[in-house]
Image (cartoon, rainbow, N blue to C red; front, side, top):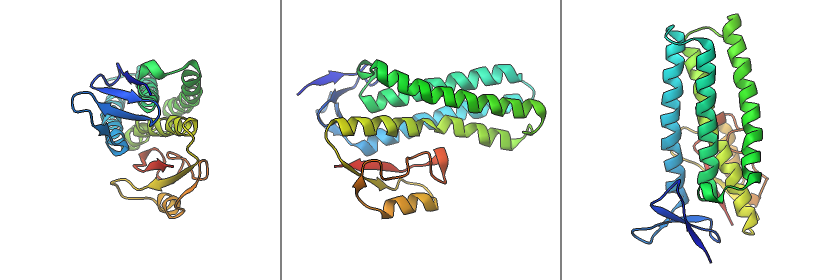
Length: 207
């Protein structure tokens, strides 16, 4: 039974068998609710940065090419960090994990390029709707976190999952997924693919 210190979260060790963090100073387990809350806080900061960049674009303080480049950098950083958080730290990230995130990023870069093209053509106005739309890119790494988490749970022999509502106004899709109760892993619409998209604050439990 091995526990490893993470350079992503140096105050905690990662326990492979339970797929959980332990606080180094107290020896206590960190709940998955706490981990998810930490992820949400980090993604909210990322959203604020993307919003700042987008407001700079709208107000003429940044050109389109620089905006696209900097948003893409923020998107990459947060998808990789979200995956590493679910894996227990950077040291636990395998080439397969990195490749999986890379495939997600290729899609995200493609969507971002289409977004930029619509801005350039005038199809996407330079207004608040641009900022709101851009913010979705900063929230999308929640889906990456939960996809990596699911792989880890399956590796540990978990076979079922259920949806747990988070502290937010819930879309009809999340309410429907919660009402299903325990289902085989893969039997729920993934977080990030429901009506609330990347704004989802639900989490999953496994057994």
